[in-house]
Image 1 (cartoon, rainbow, N blue to C red):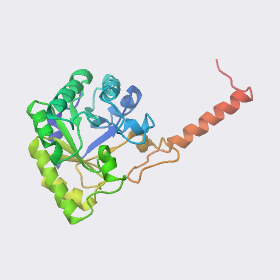
Image 2: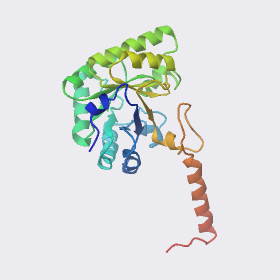
Image 3: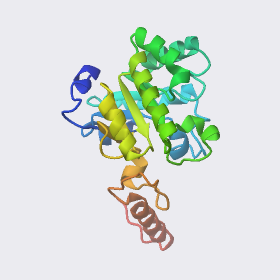
Image 4: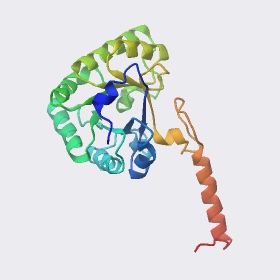
Amino acid sequence: MRKTLKQLMALKNMQKLAMVTAYDAWMATMADEAVDIILVGDSLGMVVQGQSSTLPVTLDEMIYHTKMVSRASSNAFLVMDLPFLSYQTSVKDALRNAGRCLKETMAQMVKLEGGTRVLPQIKALSDSGIPIMGHLGLTPQSIHSIGSYVKQAKTKKEADLLINEALQVEKAGASMIVLENIPHDLAKIVTNELKIQTIGIGAGPSCDGQVQVFHDLLGLYPNFSPRHAVNFLKLGKKIQKAIRQYAEKVRMDELISE
């Protein structure tokens, strides 16, 4: 039986939450038993589709991938990203699209990026019974405004703004919040200020939980790893080696199969 939001929220200051992304049934099967939360992230645009950012990912694509993950998992709490322009345009669009996500995929929560500018959307969704995960710090859907995937909120002014936005996101109705690529001491302050859980990625050890991209966690890309990633396996290089060995056997007519 899937973990519930109420169960996870009760773990604040008691147990750290483990969250990992998944984008298809196989990944969901691999992750489901071990983690607390599976996130179907719009990061699929980069790690699955080969895009240069998350911006091209559509709502239909997010629903398609989340359906696969939902069918193959039964333990982890299931969260999905609302993709770019599915919620920023209006409260009405946010409500319609988030509702469609929950109806069609059986996800239990949607995640959206931003602070002050999306507070009306967060409040409307929360008031309608749709659980929300916020996202502050490095927000990939705003990459053209940010300029690059670098650490955010490094000045006191920026840090104070992030703390205020985190409090406002919580007040508007978010039940959890991702803090991405911000100074570790700032993440600790935010975590201590909020009643809801913080999930860190590149934000240090003081958050209430951590999230990693499936591909980064397993080292599936042999020649690339983000600075914040923790590679528990170097599978990419091993997979490349195995496929080279297979190809050599075929070309030498040494492949034996029953």
